[in-house]
Amino acid sequence: MSHFSLLIVRARRAARRFTWGGEWALPLPQAVKRNLTWFFFDGLFAAASDNIIVTYLSLYLLALGATRAQIGLTSSFSSLSAAILLLPAAFLVERVGHRQELTILFGGILGRFMVLLLACLPLMLQGQALIFAGMALAVLRDAFGNLGYPAWMSLTGAVVPLEGRGRYFGARNFAMGVAGITLVYLMGELITRLPVPTGYQLALGLAFFLGLISTYCFWHLRDPEDGVRAREPEATPFSVVTMLKDIWSRPAFLALSLVMGLWNLSLNIAGPFFSVYMVEGLHFSAIMVGAATIVSNIAGLLVQPRVGALSDRWGPRRVQLISMLFIPALPAAWIFITRFWHVVALNIFSGALWGAFNLVSFNLLLTLTPSSRRARYSAFYQMMVTLSLAGGAALGSWIVTVWGYKAVFLCSAIGRFSAALLFARFVPAILPPRRHVDQPA
Image (cartoon, rainbow, N blue to C red; front, side, top):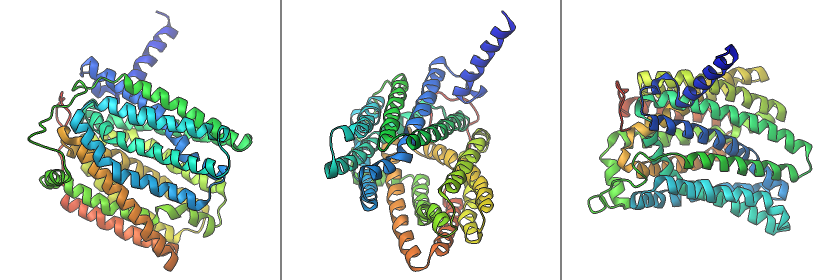
């Protein structure tokens, strides 16, 4: 074998192991490693697709003639769909099983088909009909995503073994972040160079195509439980009352849900106003705002592999607590910012802290949800997050109107720190696994 051929073989081996999250997966059965690889590429193409949609869909609707009030109404209806659909979606998973099929149907096919329709709308409609159809399709896309979320969450816990979740999701999130940043930049260039709305249509068309590749990768997964979950419908019927009783019997998960409710409420008191403050309060240009965001995203990417390893060694709870104790300083620091380099320096720390938090908080949620009822637990948790974010945005809007931006930043910092202290007090430590296991928690 030539030296060049040997390099190719080694590169392919290294790339394959990277899709597993590293060397930890070597002793695992081949079927598990196959699932890890397909799930890695599912996330890669999903991130490329979703980042285009999240970044440019609202701008596309504005380009079609929608008002800012209509954009806000669209966002409100999307949040309402989460509150309405998550529990029925969890009920469906527990009733019929077939987690993979439900995820593909709702999120992988129907949700992504809405993106294709959005891209084609200007070819079919005009005027107010075009605007209202665009708003409806955007809400339907989110609604189908909410219907598929409990099934996806349930399957994720089964596909990724507990002892390597930190390292695996660290590698996967890193690749997803790179794909997202790259596609957002390229589509921004495309949209800028082409007439409106052609650039947006092509960007959404590409997002649809990349989403189909993600669906194809997800379709290749093999559910460790053969698609139909073991259940005892007579013993554990699904209803709101039984779900609440079930959750009440698990104080660790209940504490996590309530604390993260306060956390997300506090986050969104200030969350919608950082970019606005940079433009209106500090008089930064749009390019400067975008550059600050990119700096934060890159910092978050760079910490992912290291944080994943720490999460597996220490347990996700400890790493999450450390990040939660430092994150409240971020909005407080905005009170004193006057220069662009202040924002850049702060966003480096912000990106690193949030990169750590987002990785380990997901792993902790998987750890604290029982595998047999993960669909209902994840639905309840996501409802808490959605309602808290909506409440935080409303509270922040009132505070900024009455007292201004700096009051918003201060209130957000106080709320975040309070949530961090409650997390330290009431969310128990979960020991990291010491050996390989066949059945994820």
